[in-house]
Length: 320
Ligand code: TXA
Ligand code: MG
Image (cartoon, rainbow, N blue to C red):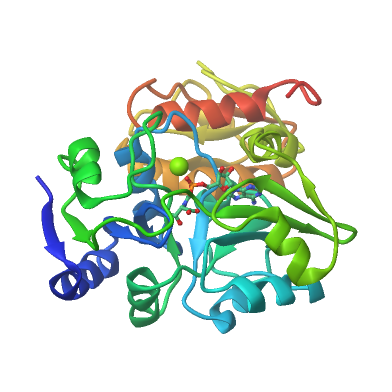
């Protein structure tokens, strides 16, 4: 069971766990988050493992200051104004990733945009001390509601994590508002702690209310990341000219004729495999192979999300 510590006592242990690539439940002003170092793929994979998410949705990157934010994302004038007006606070901006951003692709689900926010209070202090951004979805298991107290976190995922930082009830109690900043429009992808009206007043521009529909889009990964190569799942042998995405210690027939082989995890470790997924797919795609053959991957634990992602990559183009 997780230790539950008041914030004063939780600070140092939380840092130690995050430094070591672990996950920690901590309060933000909106809801409790399940946090991990956003630059560490295996740490981020643990988040998905604990939540039991059957797919890799992109996660929000939490920063401590605008310098950190600007090293990760490209801010235009409107996003600067929004950050200036509402950060720290319950507003998440979806912005283009900056080159050399350092965020692990598992956090962004391989997209070229990033959802980023600066939380208030304890979470921000932890990020500042760590010196690195934190990926943090709400600290509930998949399909459950977002927790607004340490005991709600404990009841749900307390058996799967080491530490819950107890900051009492969160003040806002609903998630942050997610706004996508586009050249000609501001779109609310998810309503939350800041209202569209407040944003309109601050900027003097109209905000498009996309409702929840817009938030589904990043889950539709195939439409965002379409590998040039075709993807062939559950391959039992490698065909001529194919690249191979392997999993585990044993190779399928014909592996030695693959134009390139990358293994998600030699030992068959799911967390390592999740952390390697996007980078390996992209690297195999860059070889110019017409098809990427994928070895069978067990449909269990984190591998469910890996398979979900691969099925999307394998889906006929335009069919998402
Ligand atoms: O209040 C909050 O925002 C909480 C606290 C812990 O900070 N966090 C939170 O994270 O709600 P999560 O992972 O449950 O929600 C992330 C949402 C998802 O709906 C996802 O689709 C969207 O952010 N998102 C992430 N990256 C995106 C992107 N590049 N484009 C569009 N939507 C994105
Ligand atoms: Mg959530």
